[in-house]
Image (cartoon, rainbow, N blue to C red; front, side):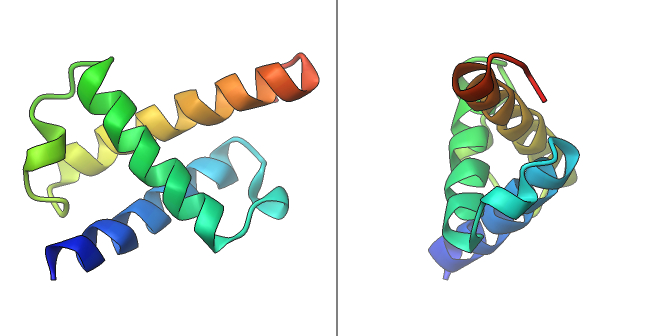
Length: 86
């Protein structure tokens, strides 16, 4: 059951990050989930968002760290693709 919650939260976080970075029209739901989950990993490893990968996915602090990590991931992808962050 926890895995399903992680997918749902990852999808929501990825979707919010794609709206913030204006890439929502280019992505589907699968890519939103991947961006959200990879954003959580980035937040946990690089940004030092605490023990984000082993804790409750519904904690607001973890969701915000994951959102920040997903935004950074999308900014890097946009920079590589287009040469600009947006």
